Amino acid sequence: MQKSWWKILSLLLLIYTIVGGLLMDVPRLFILNESIRNLYFHVCMWFGMMILFIVSFVYSIKYLRGFNLRNDIFAHNFAAVGTFFGILGYSTGAIWANYTWITDQSQSLGSVLKEPKLIGAAIALLIYGAYFVLRGSFTDIDKRARISAVYNIFAFAMLFPSIWIIPRLVGSLHPGAPGSDSGNPALNFKDIDSRLRMVFYPAVIGWTLLGTWIATLKIRLQLIKDKTLINE
Amino acid sequence: MTRRIFALLKKDVLLEFRQQHTFYGILLYIAATIFVLYLSIEKPDANVWNGLFWVIQLFICVNAVAKSFLQESRGRMLYFYSITSPVEFIIAKILYNMALMIFMSGISLLLFFIFLGNPVADSPRFVGIVLLGGASISIVFTLMSAIAAKANQNAALIAILGFPVILPLLLLLMRLSKAAFAEIFREGAVLQLAGLIAGLDVLVIAMAIVLFPYLWKD
Image (cartoon, rainbow over all chains, first blue to last red; front, top):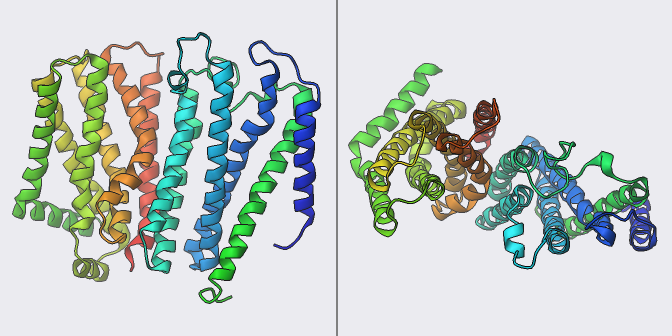
């Protein structure tokens, strides 16, 4: 866990993302204009969130296989950082929508945000909110680890339809809706200009690595706190 | 295995007959909520009707299914632990709750028709959707009830855990029930949606069977 090359890589990629993302040339699109640069931040948050949730899900399964408390600490902290990324993704998206989706002055942000994709994202955050509430309701550490692992696995399974299936069924303003030709609910990969790709892919890797870094720091702290409980 | 599931099912039904207060309690709950709706809004339009109906189903389910694990005392669970396997136990619970919830959904649909009018264009189809919906909601809440029962018998926790998880299912159901409200769907879309909900149910049942063994040992 103390290996440092990927932390340096994350830092370099993020410096590149911020500098390149704000200075390099981007395609001028109708309505979007320069706000397309938010792609490097908003979309990457969701990528990061999903990857962190998958990692948390895997550690929950690992916990149930061996009942090693270490895995529970991993699952909990990856879920926590994933939720944090989700909140960031939601707020960057809301700011973006505020400038691109509202077409006339009488529309409020609230009416625009009632989108299938945003509902799916909100459900995801609510599910993990419930996960933390559940964790908080136990006093017995082993019981907490076991029951919350079960809920984490179940919640992740239910998360899938809300993020990946329902948005495909209904039209929306968000890119990648059934109206546009790609079925991907997040964005249309064929649409991305090569100039955007230059920054977008490094940005995804950079932000995900940063998320992992934050999570590992939290995990290491927790491992030290619970040193007496975990027998290696 | 089927014999033991049947025995567990019979035990639940017998318990329901002997402790009728819970059963009538839920019936009273349904009648009272729908009567309050009737007093506050007469003849809501189709959209409001649909929304209200599914929200009421959700609350009925929380009340009806919640007790399925909370009523089992620690000692009784220990007894079940010694005589049956977790898979049989959870299947029996799911079947029982499904039957209970389908019955309650039927009653509440009847009361909705009586008190709040009938804006449904295709009633038989809507009845089918309600049966499917009632069964789906009850399966999810059975597992949530099993989880909440482990957390210090906390009944409020069921709502906190269950509502975010049930939302995708409820969205699909509300969308599907628009088919009965004379909304035109793309050809095959109704079956596709119904199939999706049924598929989700199968997924939830599979998850329950896989995960419940971890839940029930203390």
